Amino acid sequence: MKISKRECIYFIPIIVSFYILPLFITNIKLSIFLTAFIFLVCIMSIIFYAINLKSNIIYPILCILIYLPTNNIYNDKNWTYALIYIILIFLCYFIGKALSKFIYVDDMQRIS
Image 1 (cartoon, rainbow, N blue to C red):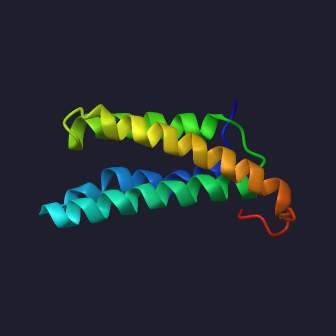
Image 2: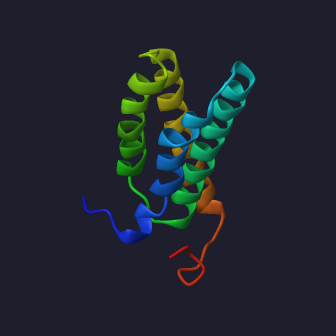
């Protein structure tokens, strides 16, 4: 499947939150806050993607593939975070798909 430019916009917050934000962690309190913020960014990005675009399952899979290298870099291969993230990303994707049936977004109002 081909990914359009409209779909690539949704990868920007995910890439920034995975690769740039962890560089600013200096202590444990900031680590907890940024981890929660990263999960929130991912949740919102996935839900907006599922609502605004006629989405397919490839977006969550690509988000997971983007996350896996950061698990080795920043989390010292702690697979607990990876498992939580994988479950969370698919759950949010299916919530967004369910919400898209109730929320009508006209093609002219969709994020381009």
